[in-house]
Structure formats: C-alpha cells, structure tokens
Image (cartoon, rainbow, N blue to C red):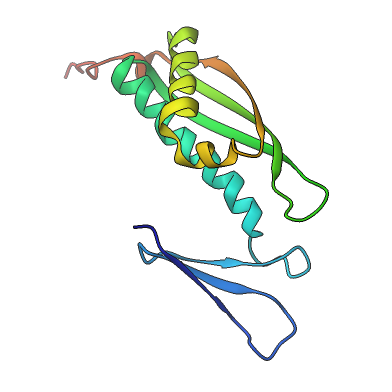
Length: 155
C-alpha cells in the first residue's frame, strides 16, 4: 500500500503551504505559485513520471541489454487542460543517455517497455495524455570509464 499525508503548515495564516509526509517517512513542502516555497502537486506528477521511467529505462539498459551507461537524464514537459481538473493532455519525455557504445535500439526497447509495461505513473498519466518520447545518446569519450579493471601502476 502507498500512503501519504499533507498538513497545513500555518493554519492561521493565509498561505496554503503544506508539509507532505510519504509512507516511507520522507518529508517535503508543497505550495502554490503564490507562495513558491515548494513544488505544486501537479509538478510532482511530472517529476514522478520522470523518476518512474528513469528507474525502468536505466535498469533495463544496464541489466537486460548490458549497456555501459555512465549518465542518464529524463526531462518531462506537460500541457494541461484549460479547465479543471487541469489534467495532463500532452506529455513530452526526452531521455539523454550518456555512455560507451550505447545501442539506440536498446534505448528504444527500454523506453517501450517502460511506457507499455512497467511505469505505473506513466500508465496513469496515459489515461488523459498523449506521449511523445524522444532520446539522444551522448557518447562518452573518457577512456578510463570504459575500462573494466583499473590499470596497474608500476613502482
């Protein structure tokens, strides 16, 4: 079971800042654009989507396709409906994979598996939004990171 709790931080003030606590006992602030002290709840949905697909894709790339990933980033942008509830209507997801000899078809497969099978946040968001996914590969050039064993030094 997933659980969360939010509580108004200053009940007698006009601000609408909340402290959120997850079931895993992690705390953070929630706010609106007027207060600006924490993310808006809908921003957390975008961050949750980015995190969910990131965990899936990097795990699949490393474990299933044995890719030498040295860096990874996911960017999410979402359009919202004009009227409440302002659900996501279109989502753009961009993956940036850094590493050695990264196979583009492995990335495509990892993204497809995340979007179609594994990412629970994505499955929920896809109920209201279309997804447009892109990726890029940044080839690593530093040879030391490509070595399996550190080079022996001579005394």
